[in-house]
Image (cartoon, rainbow, N blue to C red; front, side, top):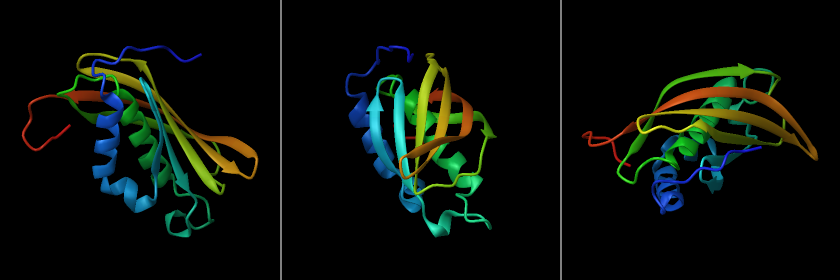
Length: 152
């Protein structure tokens, strides 16, 4: 059961969407923002040959990249309106080959904080009507306020 969090910024969803739209890395790999809720974000990614490793599976680096963004934006939903977000640490467990037609990356806040937030992520491979958990991530995020060169 997901926790219910009260966002500090009532316009959090618009802020997340605007930030995601500026993120060239997600555009490069074809990822889209599917859902934005207080403490939870879902990113979707279609399979693409140019994102695979030598066996045709989605490369672990692509899984980690999209899952890091899902976790980061989940934490960002609960941060103050003047804060930006940076990942300061993550650990990923690759549980199965990322084989599917598309992928769903879910980030969910475990413990929000004024400066440091802890988030869990799950990556699912979707193949037809079958869905398989392929990776777990634990991430620690930092709220950044008033730093030159880092925008919200």
